Amino acid sequence: MSSPDGGGSGASRVEIYDTTLRDGSQQVGLDLTVEDKLRVAAALDALGVDVVEGGWPGSNPKDKEFFARAAEIPWRNAQLAAFGATRRPNRSADGDPDLETLLVANTPIVTLVGKAWTLHVDEALRTSRGENLAMIGDSAGFFVREGRRVVYDAEHFFDGYAADRGYALDCLAAATVAGADTLALCDTNGGTLPDDIVRVVRDVLGAFPSVRVGVHCHNDSACAVANSLVAVGAGATHVQGAANGYGERCGNADLFAVIAGLELKREYELLPPGRLAALASTAREIAELANLPFDAKQPYVGSSAFATKAGLHASAIARRPDAYSHVDPSKVGNRSHVLVSELAGRSNVLVKAAELGLDLSSDPELATAVLEEIKDAEHRGYAFEAADASFELLVRRVTGRGAGKSWPSWFDLEGYRVVIEKSNGTDRSEAIVRLLLGDQRVVAVGEGVGPVHALDQALRKALSELYPQLATIHLVDYKVRILDGRAATSAVTRVMLTSADHDGEWTTVGVSDDIVTASWEALADGISYGLLRAGAEALVPAGAVP
Ligand SMILES: [Zn+2]
Image (cartoon, rainbow, N blue to C red; front, side, top):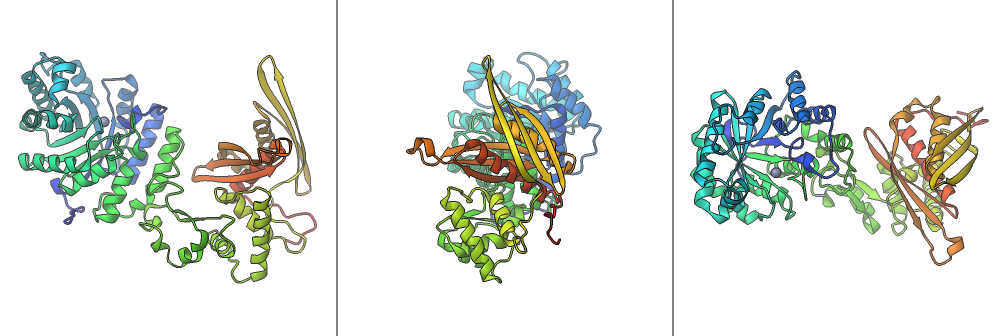
């Protein structure tokens, strides 16, 4: 990959082809409405991918409706592709109802999937090998005559090549002779390893020097991104993949990792200038639209992708962040984190506070006070490593404590009562929360399936009028751990709670002998931190000078 030509045009520029809405949505648990699909497409378009494959209009009415509505939208960067299979065996392409549906989708690009593996022609299609070639050629020709750009998705290409190289290449030839301008070599079963990808891509490029050759890799051998990168290194100029690596079984190639790898490490320009910095937020946005948990460990874009458990290295990390991460996280719109842990001590806490914009280094007394507070809390069972938000609130409260203040605070708890009921096999809890909001006293009742849910409901109700920002904050995860299982009755409970808004998520921690108290702490911190993020003004404690 030594001669990138990202900015140019023609087959030498690497084309990014997104299949989140078609292949990606085969993932278990991923079910997008038409509205969701349009929003995902808009996010990908805004990011700047070249092609968005909107779906398979012949396979379901939802995809048909998507194309009808997508046609009304002025896309900024992306061209739309509709996906479908080659014509049926022993029929004409003209009048084939599935090809007709594809045509009606009215996209500039039509992607045709067709067999390239003799085993599938013989056993799945159960037609002659010659007929399969005719199906590919006829179908491609049909759309080329209609003025469409045709991408041939050569299904199971790498397995087909291994079984019968001559026939696999004949399939590609049938498509190109009919006018297909792109050959996408699919590793449909995802079992191919990088060295084989390189060898086969080179061979195909040699045989078809005047068409665009690309790859479509699945991740069953954990090589989908690697395979896509080495394919480009071998000369491929078209890469198919899905947002966040979504897809059936182990997923498709994670398009975001492919883009970041090629732009940051091989100097290709795949996205419009400046758009790479939108990678992390786009990845998160699509995860939210897909209603799937966002993987903290996802390369480049995950919240832990640049998180370092610092230990003794905290000050070194602060001095030379580039020595501890493979790329500058800001280039993909992410940021680095130093994780706080008991072992790390003073320098770690200073670095962590600085990362949050709180400079403690100029005030050694304050730094000591913060450190003591953290040590004390950790001794009681708090863990701040994964609970950045509680850590930040703790530091802010310690630093804002002067002159009798305990700040910032968005509400003060006067008390709560929770009733837990089990009746006819149904769990139901009711919580009454009494809060002080400045000089105002608010009482609210909430109901839920468990005590924590009921407390959350009551707290939100009590705060909703003063803080409309709460509407965008929601709970995404709740974990309970018993810290000392030996002393069964006096065991300490630690609750970790993750909340999210449109821009990201944060984790808070609560610790107590009592699970409801621990949950309340984590919940109250989670809401407080959400309000801090949303820019809600904190209350000035009664009697304090603002
Ligand atoms: Zn696929």
